Each structure stands twice: as structure tokens, then as C-alpha cells.
Length: 302
Ligand SMILES: [Zn+2]
Image (cartoon, rainbow, N blue to C red; front, side, top):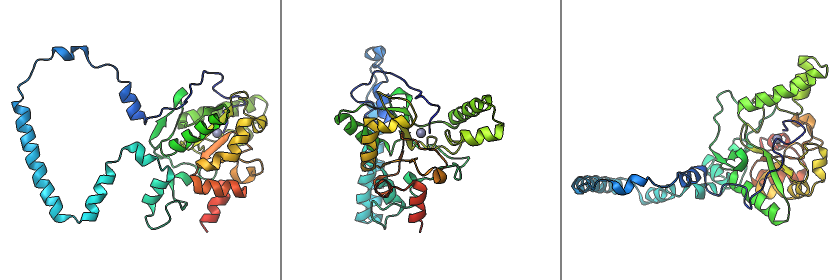
């Protein structure tokens, strides 16, 4: 969804790689600054207490290890080694890892309506009041996205750039407060043009989702424009960035969420810049069949 007719972010220097490579926590840890200059002046402590502590811990570990070996079958012991994989490795599969966890019995890639990446957010399906924002990966320029969708987003942006294009993210995760502010701004502009409050709200909602009904609040959507044209209007669809994204976004699990002829179902006008992460299987089906997320979910729900 657009905030208004122009991207909030205008011109800014783009580094070669726009996003943080490491998960936010690692990145921030790397930026925590040099070690304390007083470190070298620390008094040397006796190693005896540490030695004793180590001895006690070793003893406890030995006893616990013997109990675990006696009680657990080998298959479960093998599972323990998986859980110590680094978070970035666990996230590398994008939606796949979560899908596996949700339903161990089905195909690893099979989409199901309850999957996190298939969350339906629209005017009829607002986010619950107590919606908890998923863990985010912080991007440059203050943007952020669900960390499970980040690896695919990064690949899509990298490949678009490798194709000689200049895709630019101008909107991503929004707080409820931010969405409220954007919606109110749109309503006020329409009221200034002479509309009453109710009519202004109804028209505004076709362009800026009402608070609680935006995919941006779910951290699953990004607005991407061509650096050479940052207008959020129909001219976006003629840019080389949008042509590439519309052809390739499904390969990375993204869909053009508000196609030109689906406003009656999505409740949102055509937006050739708003891309939504749904995972690769759902994205392929949706983009190939020219349907919208609402239609896809109705199909898979049977
Ligand atoms: Zn959007």
C-alpha cells in the first residue's frame, strides 16, 4: 500500500549490497565498538576459583550426560545436534523450515492456509489486536522485514541488480501507529477536497489500508520502485524494475499482491510496486494462474 503518491524515500546513495548480511543481532554485536581501553589494566585474579567452578560444572555435566544416554533413544539424541544450528542457517530455507514444523507429515514445500507466510490480511481480515510482530531483519534506510522472508528478498534484490537494474525499497514493515498516521493523512486530504468523514475513509482505504489491515504491519510486504521513477502510480508498471519483478518475483516467493483486475477481491487498487512474501509454492501458483491471494487461499482451503 502506498503512503501517498510519492515514495517516502527519494534519492539516496545505494551501496552495492543494500541489506545487512548478518541477522540483526550479529550485526549489532559487530558494531558494539572497541573493547574497553581499561582492559589491560585489570588486576590479575587467582585461577583457583575458576578451576573449582570448572570442576563442579564438569562433574554435573558428566552425571547429566550419563542420565540422558540412559533414558533417550539414539534418534532423539541426533535431533539435539540440529537445534544448535546457527539461526541464519535455520532461516535459509525461508518458509520451508516453518512449514515442516507446522505439519511434519506433508510435503516439505506444500502450502497450507495456516502457514505464517500465507497469513491473510485485508479489509475483511484484520490482524488480531494482540498480533505479535515476528522477529525482524533490519535493512538499511530504516526498513525491516520478517526475518524468515529476508533471505529470499535479499536474493531477489541481488539478482535484479545483477540484471543491471536499480530496485529500491521505499516501504516495508510499519508499526500500527505509522499505519494510523498514513491512513489519517489520506483521509484528511480527501476531506479537504470536500468529502465527508465516512466517504473519505472508504476512499482512503482503497489506497492506504486501515490500521490493522495492512500487510506492512505483518512485516511480509515491501514496496519496491525503480530508482529512476519513484512515483507510486501506474507508470511504475512500465519501468524495467517492475517488468523484471513481475516476471521473476515468484521464483523468490513473492507475488504482486494487488493486480490490476482484482480490486473487488483484495479491496485495494492496482499497485504495481507492492510485493508480498507467500513462499515459493504459493507464489508460483498465484503468479502463473493470474489469481490473487484471496482466490488461492479459497482454493487450498478446499
Ligand atoms: Zn505497500
